[in-house]
Image (cartoon, rainbow, N blue to C red; front, side, top):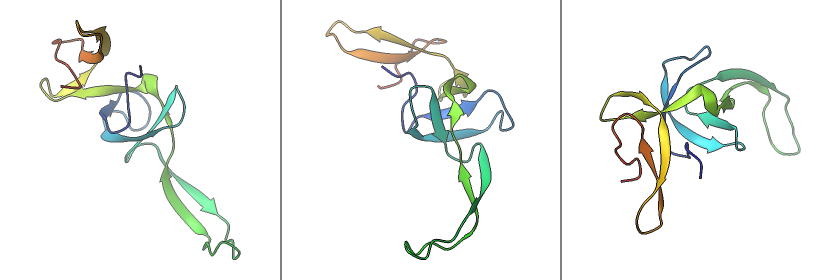
Length: 105
């Protein structure tokens, strides 16, 4: 089970965008996520007339390592660590380590 999933609100802990908040747009692999408005780069794109693409400079989000982001805890209004525990009915759920509240409530 992944501790950080698509759609989660996260806070960047390290890097040039430290302190920024954003939603996880997608998981690239087990170790990298793309966060909305974070790690933006300017990419030079060549025109491709066969596909109808116009060339130019495009600004896009690049992946960031999951160790550099933490889940945002709305109760504490800050970044928080996440744990996984198994409930009595056998479901695995995520919880905030600081206060024990369930993330997927």
